[in-house]
View 1: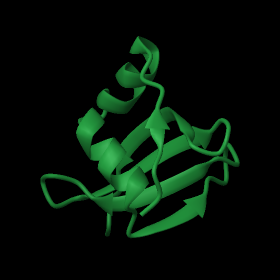
View 2: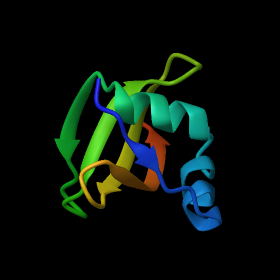
View 3: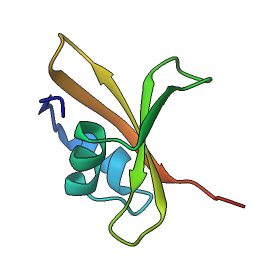
Length: 80
């Protein structure tokens, strides 16, 4: 499991929590994802994992210097 330090500025926290995800869920999934991909729209990494409610959560982030993470957003993924 990689170690990251998260840079939680108020606007980053707002983007992550506006879709119902928590800061704790975001950190847990980014540090221990079920899988990762690259966002087609931004080119940033996306970590996927199970949120606290059992739904699939996508966490978009940017690695600034190898271990500092700038959270971008998080959203639940429809699995239909």
